[in-house]
Length: 331
Image (tube, rainbow, N blue to C red):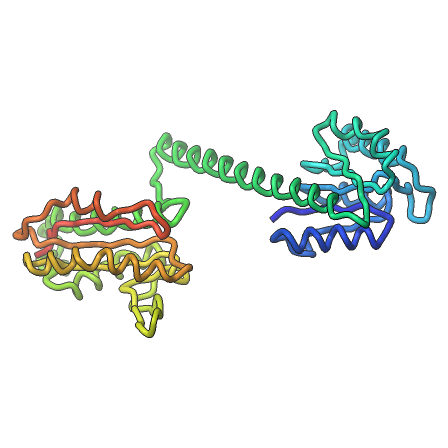
């Protein structure tokens, strides 16, 4: 969410600007600060950081003082050189004096700012202002995404460089789904590689068996809880056209849905594969669902092309779909 500072001594114009912004953009009134003179605007820039400053060209230095465009131009120069001021990312000047707009336009454009002519009888000023705000919002979002991607990559590289454990599941729901799929797969393989040893009197790994879909779901729940304590089992994910669907597991208000299937016969394989597309289509009706994870456990006696299924059914759509086929090492 961007923060905006509006500096204008004329309340009617100030209200129109703010009303236009809140009407056409997802910006709350509390994210818009108002000031009526240079002195008040300077104080706000001392104390806060703003993404956008909308500045009346003809302003008084103090409230009730004489209005002059020179006051605004001097203020703009001060913003550039005063180390105590937090400069806004972008500045838009606005004025109802056409002659002043023409005279001082260069003072704005040479710094890649904008100066708009305000006319109460026309919506042209409003269109120009909102177009600039749309561009600012889009550019800021792209910058934040690029910056976050760079920082997250650097964090992971630093962990690897120092040989520290990486417990980051991902930075979006699709990545989290893949991360959880890999955790479940490794958790099912690792027990088979342990030896009880002579000192392990109370742990018998031969008792860890999965012979049904219910066993598989219980084990998944145990595996995921340390990573995501809020994971819910059998939560109602969607009610559509009178039909209710309970997800095997849901995370963060159904943002991620996990379905676990166990295939121990060829007939069950065919049934499960037929349901994958149907479930994906059903869950897509819920706007909260950002990602689907299908975990399919396979009895080693069942012939199946693991990589073909994962490739064909996993999709980078909305919601994203991740299919992980895992061979049952705990039969």
